[in-house]
Amino acid sequence: MSVQAFDPKFLKISVLTAALQELTPRDVRDADPDRAVEDWLAFAQELGADEIQLSAALHPTETDVPPEAMLDPVANTLDLRQPFSKARAARVQAAIAKTGVQLSDLAYFDNMLVDDKAARRKKHDFMLRVFDAAQLLGLKAVCGFVGRNIKLSFDQNLIDFEESFIPLLKEAKARGLQYRVEQCPMPGWNPTDIWVNNIAHVPATWILLHKIAAKHGCGDQFRIHYDPSHAILMGQDTRSIFQYLKDEGYAFLIAGFHVKGQVIDSKAVAAWGYQGQVCDRGDWKNGQISSNPADLGNAWKKQVVYNTHELPGTAKHDPLAYLQNRTVDWLDHQLAARELLDLDFATCPLVVEHEYPAARIQDKEKLMPILKGSLAFTRKIDEAAACMYSLQNEVLKAQGIPVQGIGRQAYRS
Image (tube, rainbow, N blue to C red; front, side, top):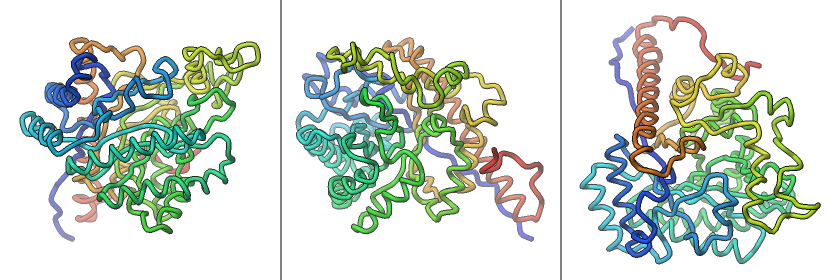
């Protein structure tokens, strides 16, 4: 028997800057691209965040997807119409020093396997600019999607990944970066009947893709930025996912987190099931794909007809929802991460991603208390889980004292 110190380890709380896309007015930021980053760092300081996940995206004048066709419009807080430079990096670093708010990583969420060759080249070139900016800023990771070529089968997409995505991972390796993949299936990315439009959507494919990456010497670059909201879409629960990764020897794969849940509409599940609305959505007109970009946003009814994104702390949940894997048990989420994953607490961010439609207020003064409250909730939940883990798995264990009760268990149905 020995005495183990009580030493809880907390994650850094970050926030994705897409939460407030136009914090800096467009006419100001277009003329002075790095002003938006400075303003967001100052805003994050007011929010009480430790870090920000800095959102990059193709400029609205350059994107191939019109904003009105998007479920959650992205933000080009980091403006990369022109390549990032040492001078720009120095300006951002000065703002970091002034505010005390760090950058967790850079994020660019787009389809890296899009079937249109010209669009794919454009997206890959932009991602390389994101890589270069991350390197100049001294960061260790970028966050994004893999995507899917909808003209190919899933098995063919694995080949496409090897031929087209591996070069991106090699470029990340050359810059000392991880590419952290978010697992959203992106069902509304197009008006087809395809529901999974991001092949890195579940643990089994994460492992397949990592094996391909490892074969080419860049397995260390391929990591997952886990978002439990997407697990809810597929009837999964966090503890079982983490247990599966551990069982398969891949507990190291998760290197970052988005903090976002789903609130499931059980009546809509009764109507449409978990594949969402399959017809009469409004993205097709008279048997043809609509030519109106605004109509294409209705493709997201594959998802949103039966769920709403949750901003942590804003939703009430019936306990039965936890048992049915219809919402995120945030405390167990953070506890399971510590019990089952190989986490680097110094570099693993906990990023609040605000996509709750009713609260997506693009007004700084109105949004401030909403985001501030959600970040505070997220911090306290993580602190509580860290304390539970240290007490149960370190302090009590060292003295041979059993932990009381059972708690949530993996693979329970």
